Image 1 (cartoon, rainbow, N blue to C red):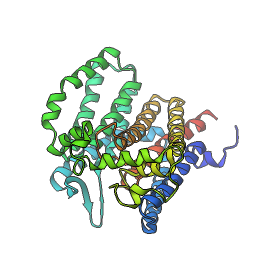
Image 2 (cartoon, one colour; image 1 turned 180 degrees about the horizontal axis):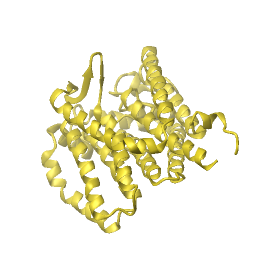
Image 3 (cartoon, rainbow, N blue to C red; image 1 turned 135 degrees about the vertical axis):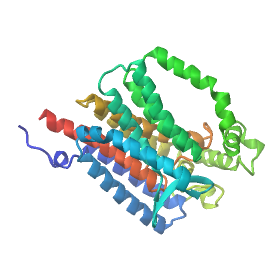
Image 4 (cartoon, rainbow, N blue to C red; image 1 turned 30 degrees about the horizontal axis):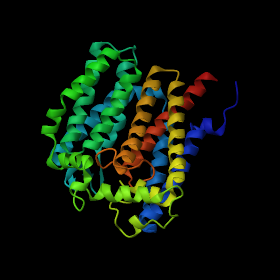
Length: 362
């Protein structure tokens, strides 16, 4: 039997960890400029990062079999917390999304980003491809939290939750006929979804189609963001030299629109480096998932990495004007502690799947 390395004993996947740390370092560089060289914000981000890494390392110690055993309970607890938000949730920026416990508050919807793929992976891990009955149960698992989160309202997070669930269903081998049926049903329900949307959500969609119709109002964010991205050119204006951010034309520059700040200062070459880091992490996550010795680990790993990919795609898409603005941060780059915790917890799951697999194979 081969002697375990330090990384194996700590249940750490070294390539994935290096990718995460490299991306976090880029986040520090971008945030320092986007925040107007605010060292207090960097200090708070450091606290968030240390806490998130602690969560990742802790979850990495848990064998996938134990994660599987607690999946249903984790889902039910997360769903119950979403229900509590409807009655006792705290309101901020016009949305009722938080639960408060003394000085602390958190978004239960963040827990559901992990709970949903976990419970679906458990449900489908007995046999694949899934039967029609199993697919129906999966849809119930997905619809319940999506409706609750949409009610808050938080359409962006609801979409992320739904994608993480459908990704597990897709990798489990759902038939193309059922997949085509879901696609047709989704397109057919577009008028109903439009009628249920809030006025500000409809306005975001209309602004996405034609931001110039209200350049000083609803279209201001995306117009300024596109100016920042375009002005970066090939090499960028240089770190700390972005005019759109430092002259405060660009709103939400430390959170949702930090990618525009990065584009302006580092240009196309900087974006290539950033996207390469993201692709490395995604590729490593998919490799870990597909190398799992158990179907539960494969399905859960793909669900986790699919959610991470959609985070990136939606943020970059909305900042560049390719998608409506839905208020989703750029993973490990934007300022924010709650989303970082969720993302790192997902990476902890991937490490648990991979390192426990190696122990079993030795």
